[in-house]
Structure formats: structure tokens, C-alpha cells
Length: 382
Image (cartoon, rainbow, N blue to C red; front, top):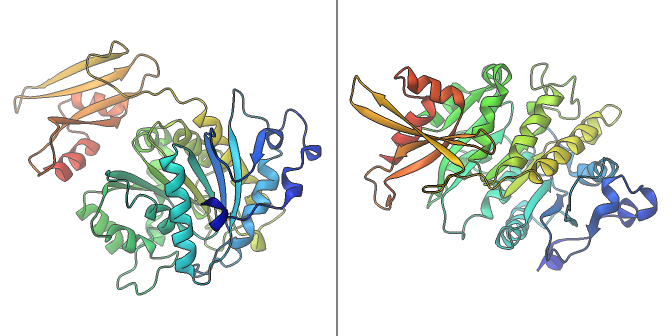
């Protein structure tokens, strides 16, 4: 089916003579047969859904050029470059093509790395999950929340309305990372809060970026918009602002995402070569993808199971309201999880859900304070 939607990237990008044995390009397979692969690169040359950032359709091949020159990833990396989805007759055709390609890769247990293209392509990435018959968690990194009221058409400033209003809904949790209050509608923040979703302002992310690790550990779909990086570190985005993540913080988030056993699709969007300076943003986008893939190859299959000897169980007794809260800590990674009661909603057959958390959440519970992650999860389950 991949031949129907994808065209191979320019052959000179994958030519062996361009790379040494220590560079990534020499170990990436350029083909349309992903059997046996772990990660698949999929470019999407589409930006008709961009309101202000036209030009990012030209990013995929430029990003590849720099990505392939990066250091070879240690271990037995099995990465394939499936090529590009070109602009469809309509933008809806592009969304459908992306959804079908990503859906097939997820069925094959291959993680697609989507190289956009404009940020509204997240809608196509999201569409891949429609027939999987499972609830997902979704995380977006962006300097604003892409929600607009009365959105007639999908674009990169309002596609989230189409995602969050999709019926039937199969999103359990949505996380917004790195938004800036002065760029974001208060109504958008209030709507996500009303839905018991999690939002993390830029200041909170920068103060404790390690708190984003459990967010990404519990994520299935991760969408990264380059506008979340400050313009001095990434000028190639018309929506970039003076404030934002540092380049190394963006790479740290990508590494967390790669390490997550749950993430089964990753998209990077909004890199615009037409306004870039010395290909700085293109270089950074390549770095972000490299750190995601490198993180993938350090995955530990680290999720608690009943009576698993690799985990330590901690029970905290809340004296004031006579409640017990259980935490689990991995001996392999020091990662933490906490139990959240399953609730009484139809379909909630589990007595409790395991929610990725941090040591800080455990410390709060020791002070008999309910962590905010626990509260919002409990509200959604009840």
C-alpha cells in the first residue's frame, strides 16, 4: 500500500558514497518495504493548511540531508526511509494519505517519524488511530494552543478543535507542553482545563523539564511544532518567538519521547527553510529526530506488572481521610507510577489504572497532598 501514497526521496540523499561508516545515512534503508524495521521516516511535503508559516513543505528533504550526516546510532538500528507524501489534490487527501500510512506502520509495530510540513498535519497523524479500538494519550509541544472557535476548515492554528471534538472520542488524556500565556487564548486554556486535560506553561517546563518525562512516558501520539523553540535557537518558523525552549531542551524532550514504551508515532512540524538562517532550524530538526531515535534504542519495556520483582511497591496512608495510595518504582530505571482508582464509568473494568509519575508526586503524597496528575486522571475516570 505504501507505493500508492509515497514517493522515494531523492536518491542522492541516501547514496552510500556520501557517508562514512560512522554516519547514520549508511545504516538507513531506502525502500518501500518496511518488514523487520523498527522506525520509518515519512516526509510530508504539505503546507496549504498553514496560516502564516508557508514554506515548510520544503523541509523534509533538507532535514533528511542533515539527519543522515549525524552519528550512527549504537546498537542494531533498523531504520527505513519510506520517502515523501506529496501534496494531494486537496489538503484532505494529504491528511487521509498520512493517516493510512501511519496506521499501517502502527499495525506493523513500526514507529513512524513524520517529517512535516505544517503543524495541521497532526490531524492526519491522529487519524491513524481511528480503527485501532484503543484509548490513546496525545501530547503536543507548541508555543500556543491551536484551538479556534467555530473553525470551518482545518489549519495549523485551529486543528485541535477537530481532534478533540472527534466523535467517538478515543483520547483519554491530552497534554500541551511549552505554551506561552501571552500567545494563547485564555478560552483555550479554560477549555482544556474543563476537559481535565494537562497544560504545561513554558516557565513550568523550563523550571523542571524532568517532570515532562512521565508525561511523555504515558503518551502514544507526540506532535512537536518547531515554534516551541525560541527564535534565536530556531529562526526557521514564522511563528517563533523570543521566548521558548532552548535547543538542548527540545532534544531532551525528544529523547524522553523516544525512550517511552508507549509512543507509537512522532511528528515534527513547522520547520520553514524559506525563513531559516544558515539552515539552523533544519539542523535542529535533524538533531531532534536523532535524539528521538537514539532514545528509542534505549527503551527498557519498563511498565509494572502484577507481582513483578523488578518493582518496589510503596503504600502511603492518608491519615486525614483514611485513604491509601500505592506507588510503584522500577528497579531498572527508577521510574515511578501511581495507582488511580478505575472509577464507575461503563467500560472501566480495571480496579485501578497505573499512571506514570515522578518522585516529586510521591513526595507530595507523603505530605498527604494529592498530585495534580492524580486528580485530573481521577476526574476523567470517575
